Figure (cartoon, helix red, strand yellow):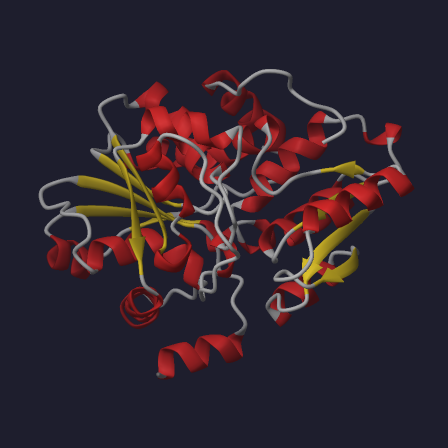
Length: 323
């Protein structure tokens, strides 16, 4: 980003972000299920970010970033994203009176592409397996004078995403465990800042697709590990490495990073659809899939989960749940 918070984000930044985005963002509901509690032997509190504006938690970070910058100094904002960050930046830009250009992969879900266009953004497509979105975005930003808003690796983004966990703790009270999906780490890092401040005793876990376990490998090796672009139905968590801003926060805060398979994600999606009548995207099911598949024993605990978004193509949803 052309303007920056030149230090690591803190919980004070999360609190400031909550104030900054309050006129724009929804306070999303925290849902419970007796069936789910009985099945897991725990008390689960699900933060339903599919009801956030633009359909995902990403609106929080995008809105905080755009609200923090001097948009008049640029000719618009620019982002690269497979979908949720794209929609978030497009909507936040419109609300703040500036234009948005989004670099999206050619295989991005059709629903996310349509929504991004619907919010007024211009889309530039690329091949995620053969081209670098970072290089494309950097060239566009320099050529046109855009302010680049990265999807996860920036203090303003991390602080904005931390407001999700802040609301969860406000609604659910003291939690013993907080489980957060992991892609580039913005949501998990922001959640770490919040949990460490309001409930230091809370155990934090990240969950990522088994096919893209760069975060797990990074945590266990003590350094950022880069991988080839993974293939998973959890398109919102498809990254090649965690962020340089997000990793230090995650590294010092989480107990572990777990992985789940695509099949386990589908089972979690099916449970949410059938038993709780919730439509969520595969990435949103990472945390629940880790519990339902037995990757993490939470019996007797008060557990927070963030359902990160609901921007799933209905045709894809029907295919996955009908399998």
